[in-house]
Image 1: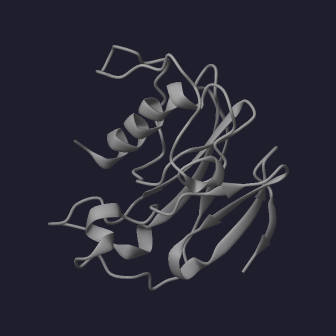
Image 2: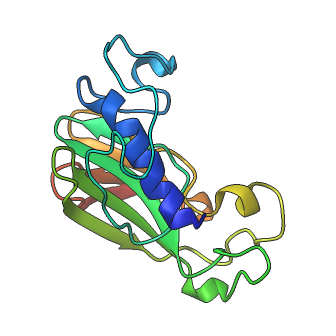
Length: 166
């Protein structure tokens, strides 16, 4: 299964448990990985219990986060999509995507050219998780994403505009 498909699948599989409360960090409220919601689906397929499907700009293994009516996720493209042929690191691009929770429509998407050289695609975490594996975290106004050597970005939830980068 391609990583971009996996990224989308992760978002879709998590969606039913996200339809109620915000899930603004890895493992949800308080980082416990649990929900008080009831009546959630216990199984999925390509068509069963799928609310919507949306193509993403690339692969990624971060967990989606939800604030209000929006789902936020990260992905990457251009490099490291294959263990055997990772490609040209100069083509690596990272992405942050904001999706409408009810419809799956992309509200905004931002691209980030990484600071190079990035860690090489030569084993370890990168070959399993790629270049978009850190789950974003959100507060009431901002989304914070970590992109390896490129650092941390703070983006406005509303439109993805950059507040700061360190």
